[in-house]
Length: 435
Image (cartoon, rainbow, N blue to C red; front, side):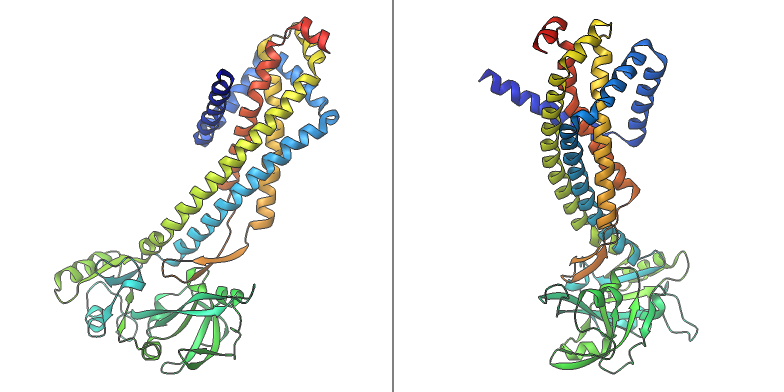
């Protein structure tokens, strides 16, 4: 029982040490590295540690089996962790790019998303007349009453049905979103059952080539164009809102997207909505709106990635422990000889730790490189806030690669600590006899 509690305390200490290291900010990590480098360069103990480390590293080729276990194990942890976080980062980046501070979205008061919002057709012209909304060259308000319908389309991957957002937009919908670029075909004509497809949706779903027809709401629709927005609109199908509404027996809109007039446009619009008792509506910038849409899934992915990474990291720590204990045992005579020549405990501990950290660094770099090579830019889709698929790309950023390297170095730090302490406490005579 005593050994059990001792082992449990050891595991808890390893987990706490790993957690503390991972939570250190980048400047604290660099400060620690700089302090160790100065100690190695300027002190006698540091110079002894450097020599002991050089001897240990020179012997790594003779211990390639145990060394590769550490490198591959840590590479796996870093690769999985960075890939998971890259998925959340890519989803967030896609939704963040969808909105800006120059446009706003109006929903029913209390609605968190378009799916549970209703704006009646008599409210839409009232909204368009409010101050704070920009006007086009023709003097009309740049306001697009819109509605969204979820439809099922077969995926290219396996042919199973998935939800796609079918958006009806007003005549000003294109002018409000200048980032949308038509890359093939033409825009839909108002009043006709014509569809323009987002580039991301075309990559993910079948039957969305220009000229093809889709059967939606028991009616035939013709694909006439493809647009690219490099945001969440790439996942959508677009048509005329006045055609989409009757096709699905929709007598109201769900949102109104507007172009704001100048820096004070948002405040003017918000005040005007609050002052009109006929309009129980909320307004937010599209940047804030789409940012909120990504929060829940991004947090979930980060939590899952961290939990999975932590579980794998604990396994990698024990793999490093076993490998380094075996390495220390195999080098008992070498370590004892160094001790007999005057190498004290601290240089020996440092040498074993630096050797482990070097292997961990190699594993971290390998894992980050694999994650970047395999997953960066990889296109997938997932359900968004409107219960439709959002197409996005994994994004392996330098910050995520740094996070992966921190995990790798943390695993090396924890995995090498106890074997290093054992090597420093190894009695010289006993080590020489056992060897």
